[in-house]
Image 1 (tube, rainbow, N blue to C red):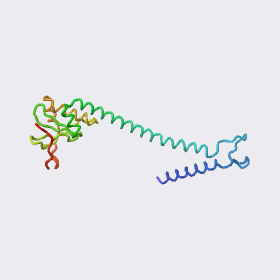
Image 2: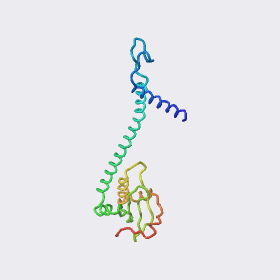
Image 3: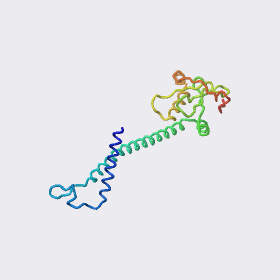
Image 4: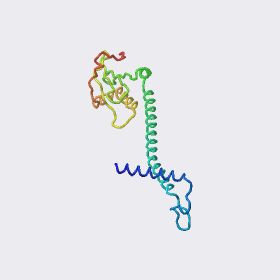
Length: 194
């Protein structure tokens, strides 16, 4: 790395010296070492090096610009996907669930076959609370797709699986059970009215 730094410093010094030499008044023909046969003047020492420096700088900056553009496009694409998934989830909800989600950022679902009460929070990992009759959390469920899916699509799929009497049992068999958190045991009660 030190050799590369020395080479880079030499190139910078050479370029800056040649750029400043271009600003000086033209040399007399007798002093000019760049005269070639026939008296025609070739580009000065700094002009091709300056061009090379500009080209090298552009070659370094172009990938950075492309990477920034790709990152920005991916970010906008992800935001569009999240927005579309939120719209879809809101269409699948009942009016009560929509109202609850807008105010609390979670909503309640009643199990299709078991009758269990679930609270689905925004998130993809351990975001389903299985509630007791008094509103306390028994345990959490973690079930999500393997790929990178927008969060609201995951929540909509969880809601549909839990509400459906045919798929709730399969969903519960595949879901991982997580213990409750200390704040759940400290008296945090859900706004669930059976």
